[in-house]
Image 1 (cartoon, rainbow, N blue to C red):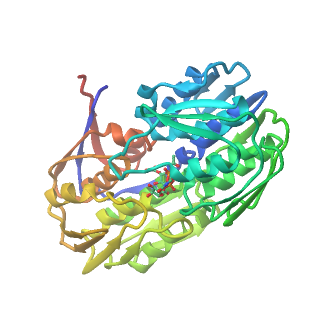
Image 2: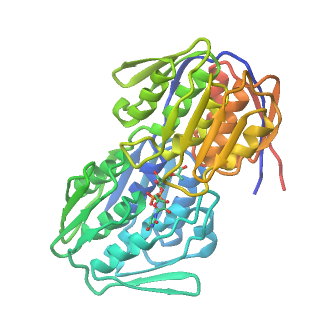
Length: 421
Ligand code: EPZ
């Protein structure tokens, strides 16, 4: 694998228009849902990202046909043959655990290697497993593999202890073909869940309540193919909005659903930025100092954990002392040490970061440890004096489509150095 770097010259004022791509975290479960279809599923607006390509590899390894041209993906899962996802593919991407629900519904059996911890936390799967058992699935965890088997799935009443996004998605996809009705209580309410409900219903499923805490699924015997457009990526959109503020710029972000990022809009306004919402585009302008904030990450519709690192980067140059608390993942402060190399003043106490604003950041050698930490350092580099060398940008490639092109068009000075190892 290559591990590229960016060389970014900061302090360029960014302005212009930028179009948000389709949401990675919506597209991944939609691709998994294609397993349930007897026919072809066509997804439009699929971002060309490494995580998406890896998910396509997982589906191909199970015998599915996947065609991916520009941003259109055609999935034909009628040729499905395998039921074991190799450890190597699983290691590349945690989200491959999303095939568990649809595979058990379609084939009655599936083996996946157990995902390990990752840079942002331990990320267990107990809620997925508990819910599947409720639907009649037998689970054996052996030699690092999860082996799931079911003669027949039946509806069940599931209460999630945590409103887990992945568990909600997996259980929805298992329950659509179960006999009888399934209720998922304390379900995650993220927009990506609503997008999944919409595709499943187009395929002939009967799912109601996505976007609320209670999802009801009436099982059907069979699903068919469908066509669907992936929702815009709310985290990508939020990242561009912060770029406008951090460079004292003026950016119009196109292809956004403003309701999906209301916490980001509210916090930017609270800090003094001008945010103008106009249909499906949002213009963000900022001059002068941004004010310190208090932020706590929560499940949707609370403040998204996937925007926490980027906001932390912004708050390093805000006026005053900010307090940022991460409640979703236990280890999502790896960007802190790197931001401190750039001159930030941050203290971490458990799950809380105390950020004392400094007048400016300085370019440095820094490293992306995961996707959103990488995005935070990218933003910090745009705002910093002189040049920053940002290592391991392949983490950023997992979640931001055409980042260099988009930022060059906005006036950023950056180039990528491709390293072969
Ligand atoms: C999704 O991960 C996203 N990934 C993540 O995006 C995002 O950070 C996260 O939701 C929270 O919004 C995809 O959609 C592919 P969870 P997911 O299950 O589904 C704990 C990004 O940068 N938990 O809602 O894995 C878990 O450990 C990423 O794009 C259990 O304890 O998140 C975590 O602390 C990274 N047991 C919390 O719940 C379980 O069985 C939330 O996890 C499941 C989860």
